[in-house]
Picture (cartoon, rainbow, N blue to C red):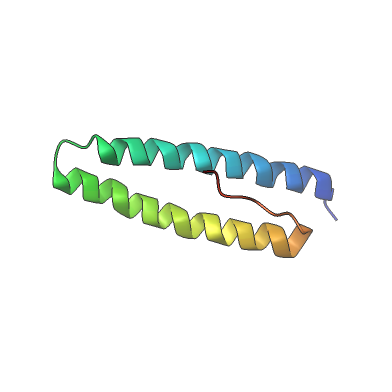
Length: 71
């Protein structure tokens, strides 16, 4: 069985990267030159939100790790 400490660290690294990517997408959406590009970034943000929820669920159920949304 894999070392759970390593997996918890990986969850935290992935979580941090997703939050960073979310901020990037929000900035790109806000500065999009037209509505089509803004919608593209907004769709990616929605997909990312679903991914984050899935990772939160997996971390909590597998390791009791509570990943918090950044404000």
